[in-house]
Structure formats: structure tokens, C-alpha cells
Amino acid sequence: MIVTATDFQNNFGKYLKLAEKDDLQITKNDKIVGFFTKQKNKKEDPLDGLLGVIKLPPDFDERKFEEERLREKYGLPN
Image (tube, rainbow, N blue to C red):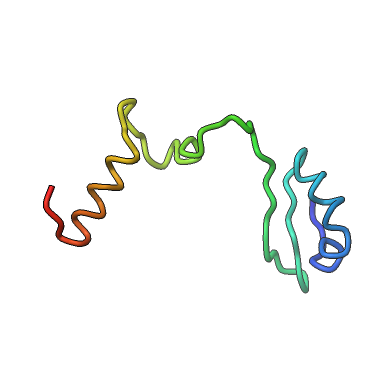
């Protein structure tokens, strides 16, 4: 569905409900300025959005990865 930014702003609640069922494109001066995409499954893991971009191993530990990244960034010992 395509909606103007003015209409979106004036009817935010209406479009928020519609976004639960359908994707919305928001336009301003006939140019797309934003998207609202329906959420596929509320219980879905946020990392699932990366499927196809990055294949994470089943034993991937996000906390451990972040700790290692910060150690490397700041030169901290293990």
C-alpha cells in the first residue's frame, strides 16, 4: 500500500493497524521516503532477518561474539 506522508501523519493509528497486515510505502512529493513492514511472527528471533545474508552456526553465542568484538576494538586481554 502506498500512502502520502501527510495522510500517514494524520492517520497514524489507522496505518499502524494496517501495517500489521500489509507493507506500507510512505511517499512525500511522489518520492518514497519510508517503509512500514509487517512483522512475520512476533516470536521470531531478531537474527532470523539476517538469513540469506549471513549464515550463523547453530552454536553461535551472541554475547560471546560481542565480548570478543569489544576486546579486539579496545585491545583488552582475553
